[in-house]
Image (cartoon, rainbow, N blue to C red; front, side, top):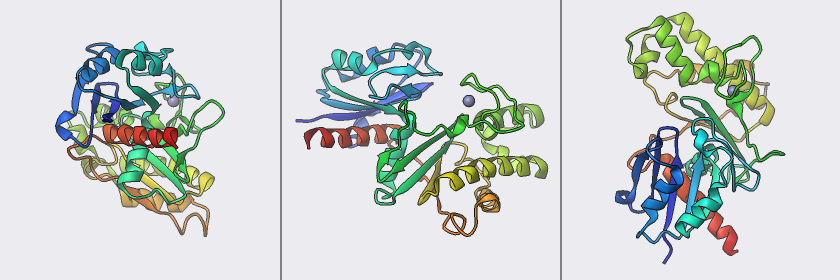
Length: 289
Ligand SMILES: [Zn+2]
């Protein structure tokens, strides 16, 4: 009997469970206890045989070790896969959290046969993932794509990665919170797009369009999927961003074929847990081939 779970390690919460049994999905506060101990505690007496684990940071190329996890420094340098295997007796498949999310979204949105799929997730930061023929793209060090940390000319804001002027310091949730605090104090952040002045709105649209058009021109993807909390905020200017991208895209292609799909809102099953579970099932299939 196989019991496979998905684990989504986030900066605030660890969510885990089996998406086929929604009642099995629980969450812990990440700061409450060590991630390995929390996951092992959940697995006790549940007969978990395998787990996919989304980690919000850089893993080594074999996806066994957490090299750098900016929001959870306690995980830095840990042999996370081995530790979890020793603590739970289950097979453990780690991946970057954005790759895991994109694995789940490609499945939910039936995009497995779409060639080059670029996932853009605008949340607190700007995450991205690239799948080619349904396999995640990996570079020399196991990096996928780090669109959020592509530096922009003329921007000097400090970024959580230690760099300056990264794309996410302009277009992600942290930038919107700073804009709210500076110019729209007291506004609920979820309503920010509905109250922006024309100038602030245009600036945001142009910044995001430039980032995405650069990526479109570089990769010529079959499809771009757009998700994350910011992209799902009320009044998010999707149509304007689309027009903005077209303004900078190479004509006639990739401009004419630009396809942006928005990720459906997560319902009962957290997207990160679903993606991690799907990722584990895919890895188990590879191992048993
Ligand atoms: Zn950065």
